[in-house]
Length: 66
Image (cartoon, rainbow, N blue to C red; front, side, top):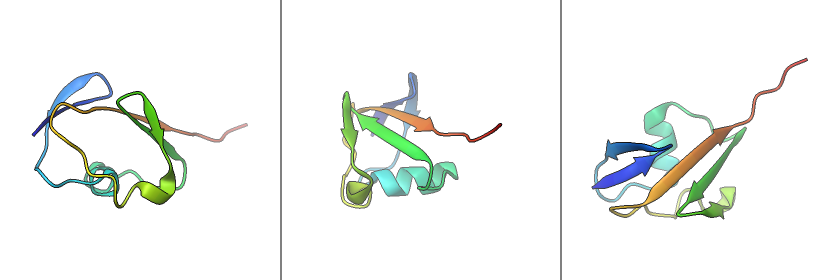
């Protein structure tokens, strides 16, 4: 399937959840927010929210510092 990931075309396998995509990208679940088609997805749904062809995904990492 083709998705738009942070503004870039990305080819991914069918049947991929948000949690699966994050794992594939090496991104932990602790400090991240995910938006699919302009809707923020709750962390509790990352494992069950399946991505579809044409979805627009934005992943935002929160970075601490000082």
